[in-house]
Image (cartoon, rainbow, N blue to C red; front, side, top):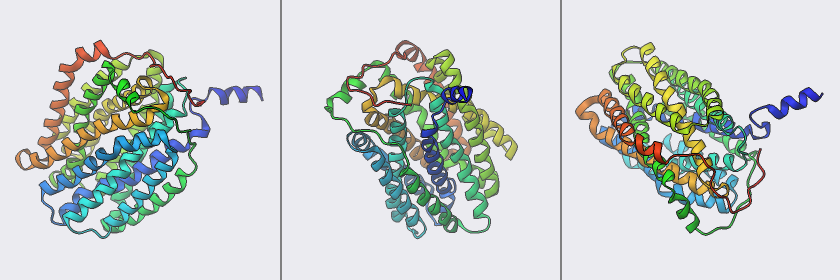
Length: 405
């Protein structure tokens, strides 16, 4: 009996918080069921590459506009209620996509989808970090991120296989069902108590040199996500002739690989406590294989290159979660998570928009070469600054912290 109790205590992820990675899995799976083939659907509706890039960019820019207010709101009211509103917006967004036909209708729906995206990207992780204790933080954050990685893989695979028997609109019916389940699942999340503070407190937190370095790196790195959102599926479908199912399998392979890597990477951080090494190595590996994506020709080659690319992505994304938790006071993590994701989203939008305009000049392959090169050169240029200012000492937390797991 005693050994069982000891085992339960040593388990790295609190069982009572398992709904957090489950919500991350379901939201990401539903989002990428929609996202993975949305560029193909938009092309089928007659949208130009420039309009396609603009629609994809509107997901990012609409998320950006209200991301920080929503993050601050989640500090001052129930984060769980904010997440519930986000799940409902996702449902309405998917329902609208089933009937939209014009570019302007897609732009409006992108705003709804972007707001939902803003809420889940910021508030879900912020709420999780608020109820989490610092002990074995790397592994716990990695397990939380596993849910999103698996959703990223499963969503496009489901979309690709379902679309084989139906069409994109028919496939969205299954995504709607997933969004309805997500609404129910959000109701089971552990909530945190709101706190009172001055908005100036956020400004003081962000004046830290390490916070500025962290945000600059994220802005540049995130541009490659925008290129992937706009060009990855079209590269495989239009240039390489992959089937929808093959596109789905490539996403699944990447998602499963990232999910397997996450806890190993998190445990490595807990042992070494070196966030700079985690970040720098990840940026270099990610950017090099982003460039090499342009030279893959077969499905096995594409999967191999993307697995190596995401071998860099996993430590960078984990470093984001670790630094967000370590650099900012616990009670204000909603607002600061929003700042982190707002900067990331601005980078994604830049990548979306740039890809839409650059594709006619260099093709889908060229966008991967350009985005990987930009991140690689920026990493080399910023590395001395990163090494000088990033450190992991905990910030002061004047407000009492909610007991964590």
